Image 1 (spheres, rainbow, N blue to C red):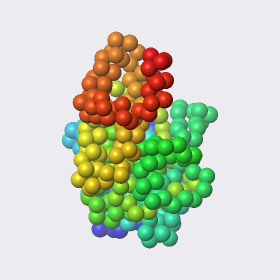
Image 2: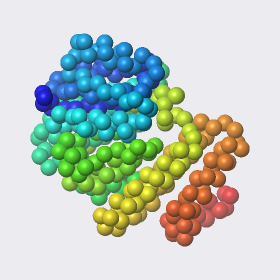
Image 3: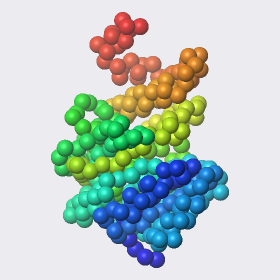
Length: 318
């Protein structure tokens, strides 16, 4: 089996409309020594046809197809099982990197033996280029230890930059992923759990300036829809992280974990209000959320987390 410098894993589900763009950008990258592993999650559109057409010209594309729709976490795990690259990155089938992004990331990992993975910027993209804006930006080259990186992922305290759980702006050393047996859980919020694990098990992380992955905001994607499963899966993600912290005796990350619960909850609230117009339905979902939160945290832990001044503002405004 041919060995590559980089494996790019792409889960694809009904994205025929945008997959051409993604694959065209990848095949024009300044880095050339890579394979593209596409896992078709039982798409019902022309996704497979587009992949077959690209395979005719680009032998570096590996193709797998799920017999049922299993979600992006399952599909990414299929990709991880079949990599041959020294490094690994993930990309959604409607997103795309800058043309020099992967070359810059590869060179950085090559030059830094103790670095486990690198992170770069994110631009949100819509249906026209004029709506594009920078979501995450790193102005300078920075080296992080795991303690600071976890606080940046969890928004534990105010800093000028943060780390997103979005996966398309990261490149990992493959042996780091395999050595720590880091795989995806088959739930919503799987990216949060994966990001937490990779940071927790890392020794050194590098932030790269002036390069971006373009994160396309598709209105029918998982991140732009909502169901009760989002709530249940979010708390399942919290349980997974809680068990990791307890099992690894990482008591020092408990405050970070509390901040992560708040961060994810805000994301959940945005999903509810952006996707559910009916106020009665909104309240029903919020009722489910708060019941789950009380069961998971307990009222004493919630009150201990919220400082007195913040609690005072909430109660007075209420």
